[in-house]
Figure 1 (tube, rainbow, N blue to C red):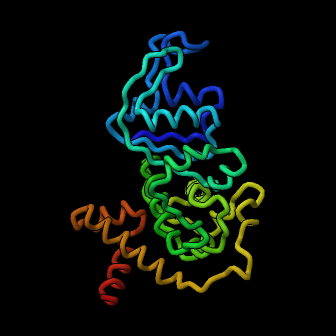
Figure 2 (cartoon, rainbow, N blue to C red):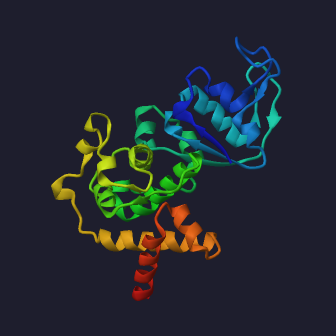
Figure 3 (cartoon, helix red, strand yellow):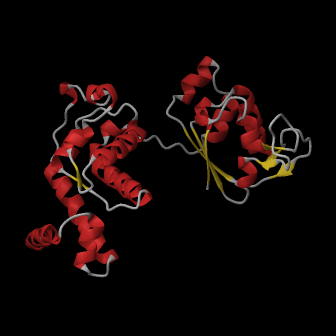
Length: 262
């Protein structure tokens, strides 16, 4: 899959990045030219994130690509056939953008045969432990370090925030907490180390609180992590404990608790 974040592309480079360019098409262009994202995705899938941030002139060219399945590189009039599957996403209200003239109506209908509306993170707090654990694993792997555990207090703190930036904000917070943690566990105190208290100020209002049993959620998550680690290490508990970043005595204690519960 070819991933493209339309919001992250410089305005002057959106067209050349998406559709490619020929040698000498503009100052600083690669001497051999370059394939655009759609050519790179030929025969596969292209994911256009933040499609609502795409300039109107590029939207018109995107519509042609979707309709005719051809692209024209910058500096070249020759069409090139492409075949791909498009998946797009946005955090904006595209219908409102259409009404205000910020998004093409024809393109809106073209990309909207199947729409999945994902609720905001604050509306699905039960996903936070799984997402936080996933991000911790990815970050630890990237830094070649053991995966720290998330304490119950840390998960309670995460669940108590409003997350206006949704999953990206959670991911950034987990990465920050990983850096400030002791390498064994991520605690609530690690989550407190944020620029100017940004995330502290984004806690959910008292009236928005919903009842939840975080202890059960945390316990289930920990048990699942332990089972996966033991399976991945072919039953070797010493290696499993090392991969989880916990002591063997703590691992045996958790295994005893799992046996009692089952």
